[in-house]
Length: 116
Image (tube, rainbow, N blue to C red; front, side, top):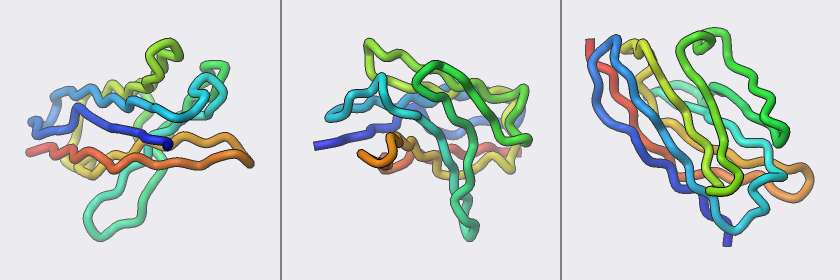
């Protein structure tokens, strides 16, 4: 079955960095558009960034210049390098794999907490 397993979350001070990873299995990873979303307590899930199957990246405005998404098709992983973290980046971060109409899959999420 399809599995997306996030890792790399944790507690970091404001201004620090974290690198999240998402390992995929059960899908033809190279075909999928991969994305990161996040959900802060009491708020709706919001889109963070996407990398398509050609490696083209897009970012939400609040993350531009601070976050970098990358993918390794051989390892079936997508990474999110987060720099200059702010307390408002505190959220559960989710990995998403999408290939319409064949699949739209989510990981369980990894907690990122940024202290001020």
